[in-house]
Every structure is written in C-alpha cells, then in structure tokens.
Image 1 (cartoon, rainbow, N blue to C red):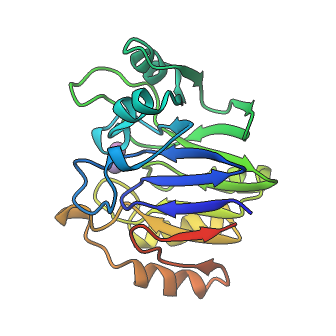
Image 2: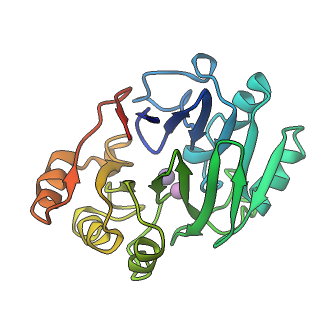
Length: 225
Ligand code: NI
Ligand code: MN
C-alpha cells in the first residue's frame, strides 16, 4: 500500500516502497501547513506550475535531500540552473521513474514565476505507483477534457482545487468529479488565504450525491491507497 499525506493547500506527499515524492511543497510561507521544509524528506519533488504557492520550498528541499525535481521543461530549466537534478516533462508526456510513472496533463491557469518570468504551461499530474493512479490537477478551472483524462487514465484518488477565485469553485469542482470519475476525491486549495475560504465539507456532501467517495483530509492527515 502507498500512503498519501496532505500538508494543506496543494502540498502532498506520496510514500511508496521506501520512496518519498512531494507535490507542490509550499510549506514555510504557508500558514496552514503542519510541517516546514526542514521537517520533510524527499527523493522526488513534482511541481505543477511556477506560482510561489506551488514551487514553494522545492529548491531548498531538493538541495537538502539531493532530490530530483520533475516538472515542465521551463520550470525544470529554472531549477537546473540552481544546481538541482531535474527531469523535464511536458503536457501529455509520461515517463517511468524507479518508483512509478508520472504524466503531465493540461491545466487552465497561469505559470509565471514570482518575479514574473515565464514558467511554461501549468499542468496537472498523474502519478502511478503500485498499480494505483493519483491525479493532482494543479490549479485549474473546469475544462471538458477532464472527461478524456478520466477515460484514458482510470483514477484511484483525485485531488482537485475547490477554493474558487483562482481555480474551480464548488459548482465547477463537483462537475470536474463527474468528468474525472475517480474512485475517491479529496479537495484542496481552500482556506489557505481569506479569498479561497470555502467549506470542504459542502464539497464532500455534494460529491457523495454523485455516488463518488469523497473525504476531507486534515492538515497532516493521510490515507493509504
Ligand atoms: Ni497557481
Ligand atoms: Mn495556487
């Protein structure tokens, strides 16, 4: 069994067969994270897009742990220039790593770095470990091809934003679940800032009406999958 842990916002950790993978580790400047960058270990770090609340502490964590960063070509170049080991991917592309498969999907959002420089296309990510697939949609609005992503890549656990304002809000996120058709869904990207203060329990009860299992993970909480 692999383990999935939520650090709040869009920051997650997957542990599988002794390998630790972080996704969007925004920890030190994240008021809701129960852990800070010095507390976490990582072998790989996946970054969905260049915004500060997703790149977060990727560089110091990668340096402290000699971890490889997996992200789009533009962000990979930026990280590589800072002396970090990288593996560039791009939208639609997958690669087999020693721990499993990583595939980037499209996301409708921005991806500039905090200084305004270009960070390529924003992405979602499908991570397949131990025969199970986790989908982290990144920051995105609703789009119809989520149906295609779900059809082509059966999803065991989906993590999608519900906070509105910068991403899907409740109505669109519920429709996204219908499109993606995951076995289980966990909301993310809410409450971190005042402007995305949405109630995740409302999302869960509306998704349950679709017949899909949904749960709210506490900050620091985990599930096995
Ligand atoms: Ni963003
Ligand atoms: Mn964000």
